[in-house]
Length: 126
View (cartoon, rainbow, N blue to C red):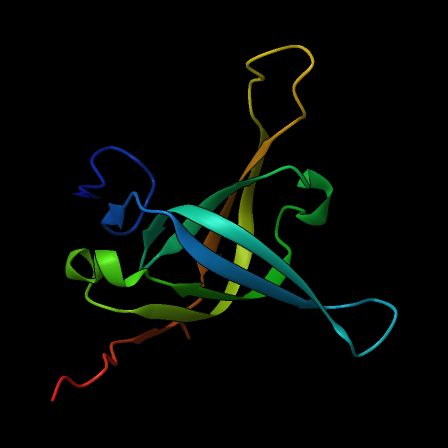
């Protein structure tokens, strides 16, 4: 469901949906890109939010290339089927643990740059 931005700092409407997100960055040791695959839980044209167990993989202001694919079951909620482009890490926050023995989880917010591409290609039905 798309929610209005209200008093929040977000620049655009967002939707709460689980969608695969691929995050790429150049490795410091060579040309091979480091690729992380996560599950986004909040998506908009302005950015994406996900939770991860690997909070060390994301540092504030890191520049990354991000690609988010909208599941076909949710394409009616979005004016696009995929978002891709440069983004940067704007928030990494340790989340409260439900139990003291539970593994740590981190919430990560990425903000898309001005070159984000919203793809709207849908398979033709013929």
